[in-house]
Image (cartoon, rainbow, N blue to C red; front, side, top):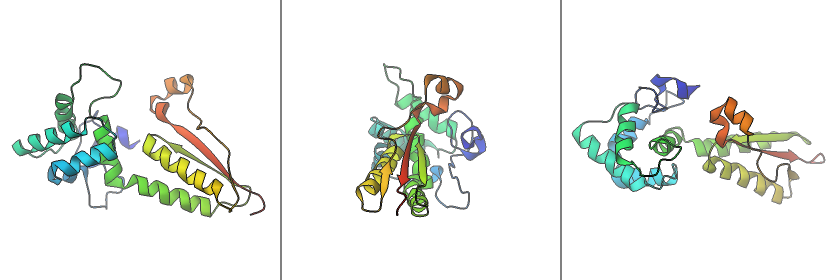
Length: 193
């Protein structure tokens, strides 16, 4: 739902402030990152959390653009990235997608939240209980997969139910395009724990 609210600043499809905070009481915003972080630090962010192969070019374009004026809106940032990351090969992703992903993950500390939330849920699961997790990109899925794998290797009595993730069918993707990258995994706590 937040992606559809321009005032939250999550999407380059809607004009809005470069905010991206799920919790508006936290301090760090995407605008602060974009306008204050060094080119090197921006590049590392886009490389590590966005997995963007053009991370250097994106960081350089942002630093050059902010010399002229602060970057304050989602559409301003999207335009800068669209011009800098133009490719002869048209992909399915908008040029700003992976940078926006990296910013959102960083602002909300999403990867640590997934680890903590999933670990807490697993700790409170009753014997014979099952837990499922849906991830929407590789970084999230890697965390879920590794947590489930480590649990299954421990002596605490866990079984992985889904050896491979469950992915949406074409019919599901047609109904909800945002489901295209979803992966769902399940883990079960043994009855005699």
